[in-house]
Length: 511
Image (cartoon, rainbow, N blue to C red; front, side):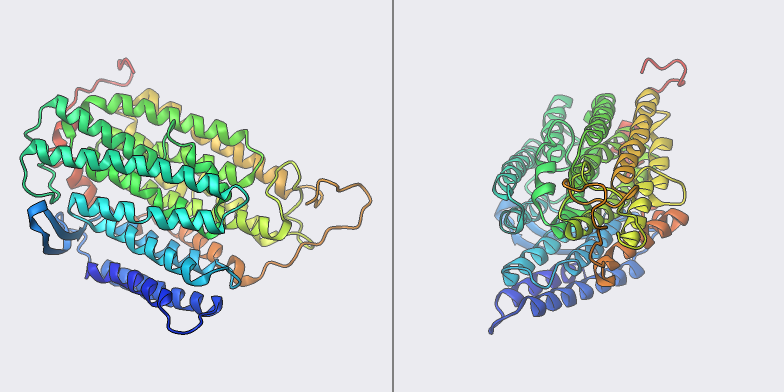
């Protein structure tokens, strides 16, 4: 069943790239949409067949591959990977839908987008360390090409920077996986939470450190974040949706699956430092976002801050915080994708993202009223306003981390306040006041009338807005699929070591 989830986008990519006759952008887009619609349908079918009470991996598939190297084709999913597969299917479909019908080199473009979809699904389902690494690296070249060919003026610089950072991330992760297998004396790379049980604490700390830096680059966390704003600014809107909503989650998924679960003793030793790392990343990302004048770069820096909440929750390593970790992944995926879609619409209709220029876009007659309304809703969700998914995810994170890391949690709450500040600046500058979209605007000039935003252009944003409200008003629609697996993960025999660290009352705790 899981192999079908991988094969659908891969076969779609092959079909488009090998189409025997001339293939227009319109037809290629329709083929890609049809492929991803089938992919989403299959994902929803898997969700209906998923047993929320089962702790172990479900829909397992096992096939011997290269036995002398310990490489096997092992797939499986649990409550951690299932919601990530869902947002991968949804966001990839919406990214293709938001792609214009006049895209250059459509065969290559849509083939690359479908390849990324299949690679991400493979990474979320892989139960062999090297198989995960293969899928993890498989999305590297397609995304590089998507930025380098269809990006902005500085696309070459941004794509190369992304390639270097992500390649270094892969080297560290592969080295850690090889070291773990060699030191544990295993003859197979098949994933098991008990792999590191016989390693000394020093060995675990070295391997965990390599994984933390590797996944920290991918997430990204401060100070490994510098590739992200450049990549977002130069990437097209659909690629930014994939990058923020889906690809960054490979790093956060790695934190849970391969860092916390495999090295509980080392994780326990490092968890206070990881909590401080999270605080620094949250505050830095928020303060950097306040300083931005480019709408897209502001949203990009907000991702740096919001990724810190995931690290904070994971550092606390208790059932509630691990649940918050996964919920925050889903929440950020939906909200960031919505914001990038809306920024893309603004840029398409006005020709600029400069907050020193834009004014009055919420104008009901001559501006972008529906886009502006959706943007207001999106920034409210990101700032954690009740009734939306952002509030639920951050509340669970804070509830889970407060007892373990009181001061760090309180400082992280400052980041939530700063989120409201920089997004209030964005909305106030760009969407209120007299409509202006040109730096040469003068008093008394002819009123600006922006092009009409078609329903098709903002339909993906409406879908995301509905999901944000749905999971915000009824979070059990998401948590019921996650909770059993995250509770078992945090209370497993290996993770129990991390949960056993000494605790103290909040008023007496030195941190």
